[in-house]
Amino acid sequence: MNRREPAIGIVIIAAGLFILLGKWGFFSFLGGTLWPLFVFLAGVALFVLIRFRMLPAVAFVPAGALLVYGLLFMLCHWISWGMFAYLWPFIPFGLAFGLFGYCQLDPYADRRVYMFAIALAGISIVLLLFTLFVSLSVYLIAIFLIVVGVFLVFGNRFGLWRR
Image 1: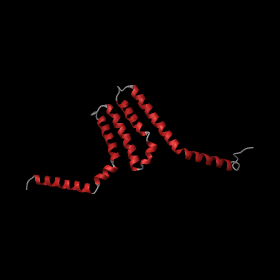
Image 2 (image 1 turned 60 degrees about the horizontal axis):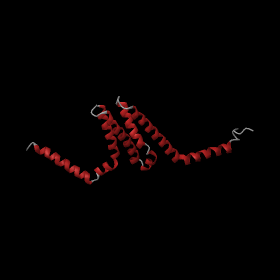
Image 3 (image 1 turned 45 degrees about the horizontal axis):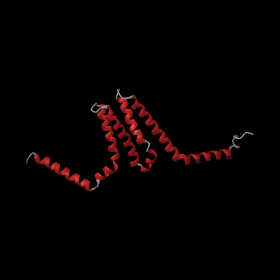
Protein backbone atom coordinates (compact mmCIF):
# COMPACT_ATOMS: atom_id res chain seq x y z
CA MET A 1 0.00 0.00 0.00
CA ASN A 2 1.37 3.35 -1.05
CA ARG A 3 1.68 6.17 1.50
CA ARG A 4 -0.31 8.48 -0.77
CA GLU A 5 -3.37 6.27 -1.00
CA PRO A 6 -4.90 7.34 2.39
CA ALA A 7 -4.41 11.02 1.52
CA ILE A 8 -6.02 10.52 -1.89
CA GLY A 9 -8.88 8.65 -0.21
CA ILE A 10 -9.44 11.51 2.24
CA VAL A 11 -9.52 14.03 -0.62
CA ILE A 12 -12.04 11.87 -2.52
CA ILE A 13 -14.23 11.53 0.60
CA ALA A 14 -14.08 15.32 1.17
CA ALA A 15 -15.01 15.97 -2.48
CA GLY A 16 -17.95 13.58 -2.20
CA LEU A 17 -19.16 15.22 1.01
CA PHE A 18 -18.78 18.65 -0.56
CA ILE A 19 -20.87 17.62 -3.58
CA LEU A 20 -23.48 15.91 -1.39
CA LEU A 21 -23.84 18.91 0.91
CA GLY A 22 -24.15 21.16 -2.13
CA LYS A 23 -26.92 19.00 -3.57
CA TRP A 24 -28.78 19.09 -0.24
CA GLY A 25 -28.71 22.90 -0.27
CA PHE A 26 -26.36 23.32 2.68
CA PHE A 27 -24.21 25.99 1.02
CA SER A 28 -27.17 27.94 -0.34
CA PHE A 29 -28.55 27.94 3.22
CA LEU A 30 -25.25 29.27 4.56
CA GLY A 31 -24.97 31.90 1.87
CA GLY A 32 -28.61 32.90 2.06
CA THR A 33 -28.86 33.02 5.84
CA LEU A 34 -25.43 33.79 7.22
CA TRP A 35 -24.17 36.41 4.76
CA PRO A 36 -24.61 39.28 7.28
CA LEU A 37 -22.40 37.36 9.69
CA PHE A 38 -19.70 37.23 7.02
CA VAL A 39 -19.88 41.03 6.66
CA PHE A 40 -19.53 41.40 10.42
CA LEU A 41 -16.64 38.91 10.58
CA ALA A 42 -14.83 40.79 7.80
CA GLY A 43 -14.99 43.89 10.01
CA VAL A 44 -13.73 41.88 12.99
CA ALA A 45 -10.87 40.48 10.91
CA LEU A 46 -9.85 43.98 9.80
CA PHE A 47 -10.03 45.18 13.40
CA VAL A 48 -7.79 42.31 14.58
CA LEU A 49 -5.26 43.07 11.83
CA ILE A 50 -5.26 46.73 12.89
CA ARG A 51 -4.76 45.87 16.57
CA PHE A 52 -1.78 43.63 15.72
CA ARG A 53 -0.32 46.51 13.66
CA MET A 54 -0.53 44.58 10.40
CA LEU A 55 -2.70 47.32 8.85
CA PRO A 56 -2.55 51.08 9.35
CA ALA A 57 -5.07 52.88 11.56
CA VAL A 58 -6.91 54.28 8.53
CA ALA A 59 -8.14 50.72 7.84
CA PHE A 60 -10.46 51.17 10.82
CA VAL A 61 -12.76 53.23 8.59
CA PRO A 62 -13.93 50.19 6.57
CA ALA A 63 -13.58 47.93 9.63
CA GLY A 64 -15.93 50.06 11.70
CA ALA A 65 -18.36 50.45 8.84
CA LEU A 66 -18.40 46.68 8.24
CA LEU A 67 -18.98 46.03 11.94
CA VAL A 68 -21.99 48.36 12.09
CA TYR A 69 -23.38 47.25 8.72
CA GLY A 70 -22.96 43.60 9.68
CA LEU A 71 -24.95 44.13 12.88
CA LEU A 72 -27.59 46.13 11.01
CA PHE A 73 -27.96 43.52 8.30
CA MET A 74 -28.05 40.69 10.86
CA LEU A 75 -30.97 42.38 12.63
CA CYS A 76 -32.82 43.08 9.41
CA HIS A 77 -32.14 39.75 7.70
CA TRP A 78 -32.73 37.48 10.69
CA ILE A 79 -35.71 39.31 12.20
CA SER A 80 -37.43 41.35 9.49
CA TRP A 81 -36.38 43.59 6.62
CA GLY A 82 -39.25 45.86 7.66
CA MET A 83 -37.00 47.05 10.49
CA PHE A 84 -34.72 48.68 7.92
CA ALA A 85 -37.36 51.38 7.42
CA TYR A 86 -36.58 52.51 10.98
CA LEU A 87 -32.88 51.59 11.25
CA TRP A 88 -31.59 53.11 8.00
CA PRO A 89 -29.84 55.97 9.88
CA PHE A 90 -27.26 53.42 10.98
CA ILE A 91 -25.83 53.53 7.43
CA PRO A 92 -24.14 56.94 7.93
CA PHE A 93 -23.47 55.96 11.56
CA GLY A 94 -21.27 53.10 10.31
CA LEU A 95 -19.04 55.57 8.50
CA ALA A 96 -18.99 57.82 11.57
CA PHE A 97 -18.00 54.85 13.75
CA GLY A 98 -15.16 53.96 11.40
CA LEU A 99 -13.89 57.55 11.23
CA PHE A 100 -14.11 57.93 15.00
CA GLY A 101 -12.13 54.71 15.54
CA TYR A 102 -9.51 55.90 13.07
CA CYS A 103 -9.14 59.18 14.96
CA GLN A 104 -8.79 57.29 18.25
CA LEU A 105 -6.09 54.97 16.90
CA ASP A 106 -4.03 57.48 14.93
CA PRO A 107 -2.53 60.25 17.05
CA TYR A 108 -1.78 62.28 13.91
CA ALA A 109 -5.33 62.16 12.52
CA ASP A 110 -6.71 65.51 11.43
CA ARG A 111 -9.04 67.15 13.94
CA ARG A 112 -11.48 67.95 11.14
CA VAL A 113 -11.96 64.23 10.52
CA TYR A 114 -12.78 63.79 14.21
CA MET A 115 -15.28 66.66 14.11
CA PHE A 116 -16.83 65.24 10.93
CA ALA A 117 -17.22 61.84 12.60
CA ILE A 118 -18.90 63.40 15.64
CA ALA A 119 -21.19 65.51 13.42
CA LEU A 120 -22.10 62.53 11.24
CA ALA A 121 -22.87 60.41 14.31
CA GLY A 122 -25.02 63.22 15.72
CA ILE A 123 -26.90 63.58 12.45
CA SER A 124 -27.45 59.82 12.37
CA ILE A 125 -28.84 59.81 15.91
CA VAL A 126 -31.12 62.77 15.14
CA LEU A 127 -32.36 61.01 11.98
CA LEU A 128 -32.97 57.80 13.96
CA LEU A 129 -34.93 59.67 16.63
CA PHE A 130 -36.90 61.56 13.98
CA THR A 131 -37.69 58.33 12.11
CA LEU A 132 -38.84 56.64 15.31
CA PHE A 133 -40.87 59.68 16.36
CA VAL A 134 -42.63 59.96 13.01
CA SER A 135 -43.39 56.24 12.88
CA LEU A 136 -44.57 56.17 16.50
CA SER A 137 -46.39 59.52 16.45
CA VAL A 138 -49.80 57.90 15.93
CA TYR A 139 -49.27 55.79 19.04
CA LEU A 140 -48.03 58.78 21.01
CA ILE A 141 -51.11 60.80 20.04
CA ALA A 142 -53.37 57.89 21.01
CA ILE A 143 -51.68 57.51 24.40
CA PHE A 144 -51.87 61.27 25.00
CA LEU A 145 -55.59 61.30 24.21
CA ILE A 146 -56.22 58.36 26.54
CA VAL A 147 -54.33 60.04 29.39
CA VAL A 148 -56.21 63.32 28.90
CA GLY A 149 -59.53 61.46 28.76
CA VAL A 150 -58.79 59.52 31.95
CA PHE A 151 -57.76 62.76 33.63
CA LEU A 152 -61.02 64.45 32.60
CA VAL A 153 -63.22 61.51 33.58
CA PHE A 154 -61.63 60.60 36.91
CA GLY A 155 -60.15 63.96 37.90
CA ASN A 156 -63.00 64.90 40.25
CA ARG A 157 -62.93 61.58 42.09
CA PHE A 158 -59.29 61.91 43.06
CA GLY A 159 -59.43 65.58 43.92
CA LEU A 160 -57.53 66.72 40.85
CA TRP A 161 -60.10 69.44 40.09
CA ARG A 162 -60.16 72.05 42.83
CA ARG A 163 -62.86 74.71 42.79
